[in-house]
Image (tube, rainbow, N blue to C red; front, top):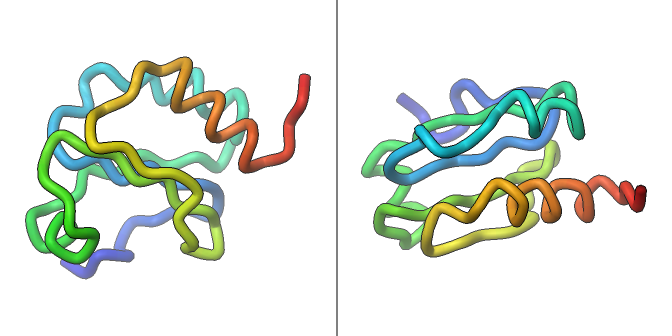
Length: 88
């Protein structure tokens, strides 16, 4: 499948590796259109990443943040809130 298949209208976290620890409901409270997508090997190669890693994409497909490990949910939520301009 193409790298951009399945991306939503909001922010998207591309996860390279295990997604079990990511609380998507918590992130959707910050951005109701938030999408979580497990990335395949071709996608990992396109971002020059190896699992575990996460890339947070803005709706315009620019990279908002990237981690070389799956971050704690607090870190991911903080990055999402910052990218959205949410201060409270």
